[in-house]
Structure formats: C-alpha cells, structure tokens
Image (cartoon, rainbow, N blue to C red; front, side, top):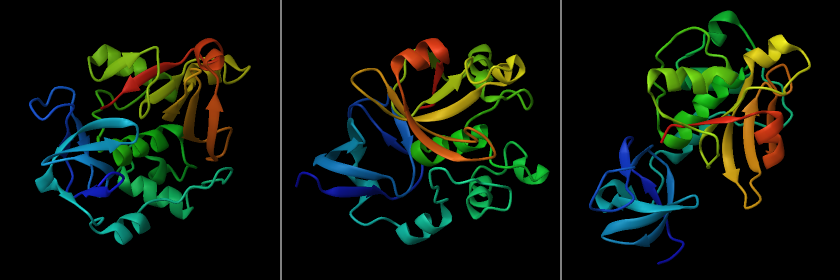
Length: 226
C-alpha cells in the first residue's frame, strides 16, 4: 500500500497533524497529490510532511486532472512572460488580477507569481490588509503590522521569501525588494525558490540560494501562509 497516490476531492480539506486536532492544520486544494501511509483516518505525505486527512475526501484518481492541468500556467525557466503570454493570462485569472497587472498590461510580477503559488500549492487565498505598497520586500512588514500570518527569519518549504536588501546597487530598487516562493529547504540551510520577474521583464526563474546569501546578502524575511 505504500507509495500509493491519493488525490483531494474538493477544495478546503484540512491536512491535520493528528486525527484528534485541527491545530496547525493547512487547507488543501482539489487535485492535490498525497502519498498514502495508513487509514481509515488516512495518514498521508504532502511533499516531505506527514499528516492526516479523512478518507471521505480522498480518491485514487485526480478529479478533473486534465482540466486542472490545462488551466494552469506552464512556466519554463528563463522564459519572458509579458502581458499577452498565455502563462501570464492564466495566472492572473487564477488570482483575479489581484495586483492589476492585467489591467495595466504589465509583464508578470514577482508578487503576482508568489500569490499564485500560495493559492495553487497551499489552497490559501491571501487576505490583504492593504491595497497599496505591496512590494515584494514589504510583505513581511505588511502582515506583521496587521497581525496576519506568521513571520520568521528562518525558511521552511512552501513559504514566501521577502528579499529586503541586496538585489540591486540602486537603493530605490532595494527599497521595493523582491519576493519568491520557497520550494525546498536543504540540510545545509540553502533554499530552492521559484520566482517571476527575476532578473527582469517577467522572466520565470528557479534557483538555489545559499544560507549565507539569504541571511546576509538579501536579509530575507519569511511569511508562512499555512
């Protein structure tokens, strides 16, 4: 039974640390893939995390898998994503053009991409306490001041990484900052991120960043949405 793949039937299903409590639970999206461990309260793996989901919300086939895949962007490292790129259009539809990039005919922005990744990976619709000044390097401060979400100086998978310094010799660009989605954290403290508009013009990128760089060069802050 090990390594058997299961899929979430609907949005909003809770991924619990224990069957007895919802404390620390995260929200899962329809089609999210899990690895079967045990049942009938089904013990599963989400990436490297183990938790519990009630069997009533699981299926062995991905519900609407083909449609889900076709509705999602297909990003390629190094690819420029301008306003009329299909990836950019699909992403903005998923996040309801939260930052107005579609309206303004702008290339894909780092904030848009990170909001999209939080929604599709975690099933979380970010609650914004403000509508202006939402630059990538400011997310941690916005949510800290509003008492929303958890802010830390150490990363974990599936969080947002705010670059608050070190991205340019131009102090005005450093003030704006940058944001990326942490896909993995490695034993040496380095992180793998995915991101948009790095280094410019809506380019999609994936890279590994050393602990020294995210800690000292970029002075990163991490936002946990799960």
